[in-house]
Structures are given as structure tokens and as C-alpha cells.
Length: 209
Image 1 (cartoon, rainbow, N blue to C red):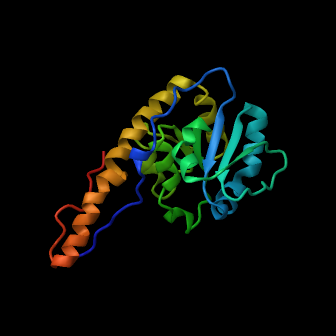
Image 2 (tube, rainbow, N blue to C red):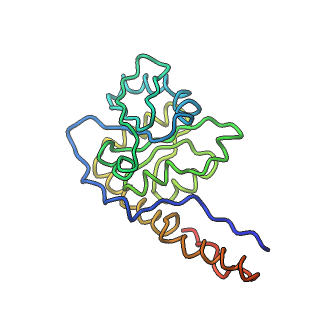
Image 3 (cartoon, rainbow, N blue to C red):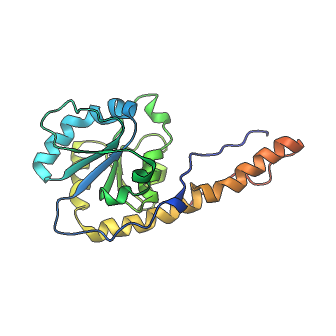
């Protein structure tokens, strides 16, 4: 009765609305994350993305620091060096955010930060549905992909700029309500004050949609 859970949050106020989805150019899939995360998650799926790229013709953009080579030389990709400013404007660099994971004990406990960043930027997402990801993707806020065929289908569907716009417009308000600094700072402050006063926190949760 003295435990409060505060989730990972995103500063949505610092992220501008996304540009209007563009048609007539190759779809840009984007991945944002750390050097360690590249090795643990993206590298494991490099061969699959190389195959799908040859089939579907998308571009791959990796936002990270430092630049890390991919294990499959067939995969064509462009590196964008991470910075706070770049992170806030990821919708300038890609059209769809991806979060492929490996189904192991560690990755099942990941907090979904990538998805929250993509969603806050008004981008549609494709992600492996393990851990918290299914609940973040639900309600039309993204697409779950469990295997190669599912990834291929999701990428093909998101060639449609209208669908990308619809998903992004659903995802961003959800993050604003449930996973933003603005929504959670008052609750975190209340938790800290309750510890100081020896009281029970008044508000420590947000109802899920």
C-alpha cells in the first residue's frame, strides 16, 4: 500500500506536430536507440530487413550515437547522429518507427520507450508484440508484427500516407494523456510529497483507454 508505479514518459511539449505524410517517395522506416540496443535488438533482425528491403524497396534510417555497422551487408541504411534536437524531430527523418525485439527475459521487460517516442512524434509504429508493446499498440495506435510475413504486411500497408496519418493522429494524443511529462509530473510530485508527509499518495495512476 506504499508502492507507486511511475512509467517511462516523454516530453510531448518539446515534440512538434509531424509534417504531413508525403506520397511518391520510398517509405522511410526509422529506428531510434542506443548503441547497446542496436546490438541486442536491431542486429538480430538485420537479415530479415535486408530481405524485406529487396522485396518492398523501403529506406532504413538509424538514429543513434555512435554509428554502428550492421551485420548484414545487403541492408542499405542511412545513419543520423543522435542529439536531443534530432530526437525531438524524428518525424523529419522517417515515416514509420520500428521496434523489433527478441523474445527473451530481458527484452520482455523493456519499457516501450521507442514506441512512446515514435507515437509522440505522430508516427505509426511496427513492433514485436512482447512485454508492454501490445498495450501501447492497441486501439489502432500501431501494428504488431510477430514474424517476417507480418512485418512484410505491415510495411506494405504503411505505404499508404492516409493510413500513416490516421495511426499517427491516434497515437500522439494517447501518449499526451498517459505517458507525457505533463501528465505525470503532478503525480510524481504527489508521490514525493506523500513520502515527505508520511501520507498516502492521492493520485498515482492514469486510467488506460
